Image (cartoon, rainbow, N blue to C red; front, side):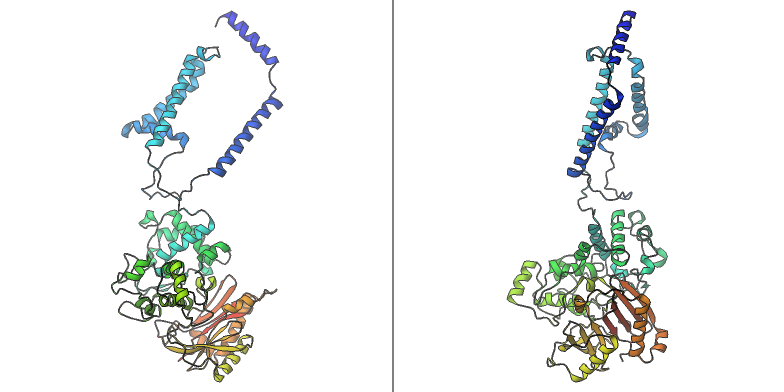
Length: 576
């Protein structure tokens, strides 16, 4: 640059400086406009394009294809040309030289001209770099295999709870029970006879954080017989799947967590209208998934009876068919009634299936075991199925709560008595209602049935129903009310202020127990006492774990609604 050029350059510089644009507010205003435009662009991209949902990072997932974001793809592709021992050349040496050249470029090219045609070195260098980055990015995008689809990744809380319930049903029910109630393990190699403690109570839900529960599931507890389920430890569950199980446990069993209404609705077994025939797709499949698939899938000891699809339920197994449409003596029906037959023993092994779910199975078989809702609709119209109890529709509470009276009567004998209440039973029911504080209402005879899941395994009861929907089961030998099911009457219960405390309800339950069983003070010394709550329901239970029976341990259970109304009662402690 000669002196004459320098002089003209400086004159032009000072002239432009006098006419220059002020930093504030002109330059600041332009920066704000550009920044706001970029912000709006990001909002639009996030709204209409978004980010693809992917599961949590899983180091054990060999199917995952690691790759950087698009703006680093050129480096990702560049590294492919320097394999093995030369990787450092592509990763550090050449990129380092390129950055150094860019840093020194102002010192290398001191050309004072601003015209493109007179700045060939600078323009040429940047053109080569930019074109190279674009070409390498395109090659990387074209040659890199697509990531495995992640369309099924649960994103919302409801989706995570639903996915977690499905995973729990398959992987955990076998040992922990469908409602986390635990109990004696049956049919699991190496764990036969082991008694698993409940995991659905406050001792677990309050004391264990989500991270702790996830670690237990992932790493297992080998000293207690629980195998690892996380992939890094030899299991089959990914971090996202374990997270979903923990979410299901937290929102289902922790009374501090409020279950979203849509999640509760999704988890509930669909209800049945009077004379409606259930279908496999709508009613039976959710029950099978929740209570059966954990054991009845490939790789388990189940007489090759798998239940992962309609065809498997109908046709698989060493004693197939286990379901014969229209035949209530089908193997599966007999097993859920807890019979020991060549096809298998009582199902589920750890505890009886709730009576309302058993009735759904019976109505399904009686209706011809249809697969689809359309087939069930046709069956309902052409051949209505008689119902044994008009109040047997399912509620989400009855399907999801372990501590409800689950040893409810199971129909094995059709009603043969006249449809009028026996005077002796009416006296017993009235005395019992006064003791429990239940309203004195007219009752109607419903059925005489066999309670096969009583401690003796063969208890004949007469079931009555009052005008508000409560069911009373009266034992015909001891002449006492052994069960009250008042769930259908809760719809008429109104909210009350000043709900009783847990201690007040506990005292009330204790008074009822002492009034019912004269020698309860001494008897209770050998009983296991439990108290639990689930949402609006509170339960007090005394169990006889030392009883000789191995099937159904006798117990006394009293269930209260949150306002102190008794809605559930079950007593088999004094049955002979």
